[in-house]
Length: 313
Image (tube, rainbow, N blue to C red; front, side, top):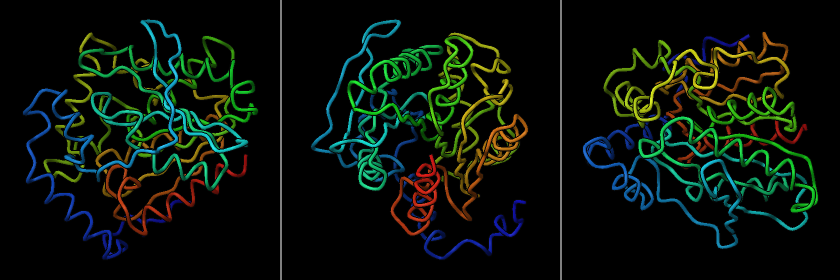
């Protein structure tokens, strides 16, 4: 049973309170992300000019181009010697921002702690490439990995996961592989602060204007950009919360209580369980949206718990 005490503001440690205040103050000093063209904001974020710290790039990362439905899809690969498995990673950024090279530090940690090679998908971004571009690219990456993991990495022990929009795309990819290709190749899923109902859950609608990484308006505009070409908000390929979740792999859902889309993880983990799958729900007091992207003891504990979960499989 989920402990109600996790949601009590008194449960938030002083370090996390201070970090959240720093995030709000930083975003107040920066241009609103909707006031400039997406390409400009992408460049700013890549240089640390967003909510998250400056990303550290891995010197051993390599890029591989694979065929996709609309051209080549770049994959960023970080692999330890003799990998014990492969993690298909899908980055966040509201389908509009982000890239495969902005979380190298966490993927290097996967290599160190779990012996996993990481394959991060540089999928096409909205609004230039609206739905279904991003899920199409992720599906192509997953199919390539199924076909090539053993020959390229020496293992067919596969995992999948991502943050925010990346968690959404991870679930969509799992459902596409099951439904379209009859494949269930992934042993477990690592789903961080995902958005699973693009019609917006109550926490997203009620959040308001506080710029703690993401506010209500941001969720709305991310969805509008992603669905620039149209789409049914109840279509499971768009809002996987409404899909048939039977036969999906064990998953860990990581989310902070100070996340505008908190409800998405609460609701999806319950539906995951109801569908007969294992769902571990890790709720972290005071954690902002994708708080694992910020330094601190809360992120360290959350990452350690996710790693312990993946190590079981």
